[in-house]
Image 1: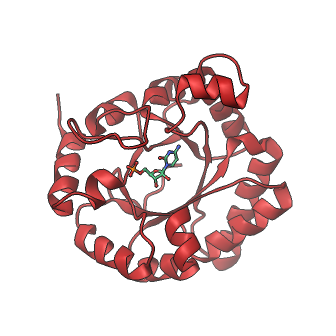
Image 2: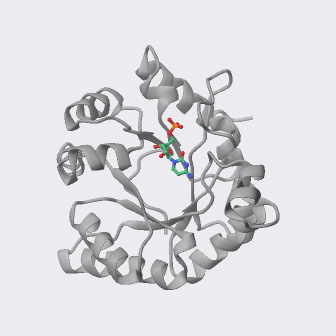
Length: 243
Ligand code: C5P
């Protein structure tokens, strides 16, 4: 069920405030990126216009809006994002299986109405910025993060979702649990020597792919680099390295 629109595993997070900045980055990085991610910062600043303009230029777009609400509301948002041309959309697994099923059904239904291929619908598991200690103390959920991530991945698969967003450290376990066709999108990826910023559970791009990731989401290590093109090329080289 892999999405054929993303030409390689590298998805660049366009965490900027304006469509203009997003277009500059997408034009510059287009030859190297498999696709681009429009997240909360850009969507809440520039609106669906950002998605539409990127799609007009042929850029494959992941709308990372982490939907989490009652099933009917999430279904409505999933329909809207599908109409805006998002090729991947996501919801929080913590919203439960009914909510996930509603999102996937709505996206597929809306795509069918428009005669387009349905977007991948994936579930966010545990954010890559959450450490084991914070997870247990602040969410009140006991046990290792990995157990919660694999449980949510199975719930997402049963609800008809195409995959999950998970930290690199959980990719291996999710791949073993959910099998080869399940999409795993991995943020928290850091090239060797790069700043980790607020991410807590990281791996290098090559390691994450070897562990079984389908797509990598990389933001600041590319967009804040002195030479973003060189940074993206080095990540791609690491991803494609055969050992
Ligand atoms: O700049 P950086 O590479 O840390 O960006 C990672 C991107 O992936 C951000 O846009 C962030 O919102 C997103 N993300 C994440 N962890 C998740 C899901 C999404 O870091 N679990």
